[in-house]
Amino acid sequence: MFLEIRRRTMREYLKLMRVKHYIKNLLICVPLIFSKKLLQDSSFFDTLLGVLAFSMVSSVIYIINDINDIEKDRSHPKKKERPLAKGTVTIRSAVLLILFLFSVTTLLEVFVFKNSLGSWAVLFLYFFINVAYSYRLKNIPIVDVVILAMGYILRIYYGAVIVNVEVSAWLYLTVLSLAFFLGFGKRRNELIKRGTSHRAVLKYYTKEYLDKVMYIFLGITLVFYSLWCEGMVSMLGRSILFTIPVVILVILRYTLVIEMDSDGDPVEVVLGDKIIIILSMLYIIMILTILYIKV
Image (cartoon, rainbow, N blue to C red; front, side, top):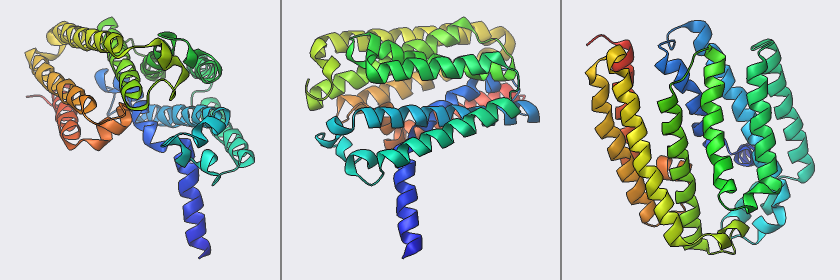
């Protein structure tokens, strides 16, 4: 009985930390993979610990946001099941968890990345803009999605700092435009399913506007990715171009899913659709084969 209670409590803490959303932090591995350093032990483990550190900071931000929105969440049909809103985790326990996660992050930065001011700067900037987002910026139209998009770019840059490589401008632009597509897609579906009462900023948006900007960024994402592939032909061969149709299929499937009965949350969409998972795995296999196996 005691063990069951402890397991249930642990599940609530993990839910509070939004562990499922750690999938977004895998973007930190992109510079490692594309720089062909995946098989180098030091780079691999440094990146792995970097993902862990970034995940801890991400959880801190989620917890701060939940504390700030606890009353609103209690009246929300879905968010009322969050641990703080439901009362399965107290605010005091949440604050103690924040301190613990900060301690883990600090230890990783001090003992693994040592004097790397770049990694400290990225984590601080990510934390600062997201706290600002939680308390104020999430209510300003366009700025709210810009903050979300910056989070994706900072993940890529953090990974580049860890393995000390430069990332192609085309790749940054691909990730940035994709982030805008995901962000505006999420706002679109929130507006459709929940209305303007769900989130204060939604009163400034219309479905027509969100449709237009969402598909603008969908188009330029594919353009930027294609330009990145073309630029990599001299280094990786023309086989890299075969990944473009796979990326197109992933985005088409993603778009179809959010046009159906979906809240538009990128993590929920990706993890909840088998076809997207299969296509994504195919893309990863193709990239790893092109980069690391002579064919």
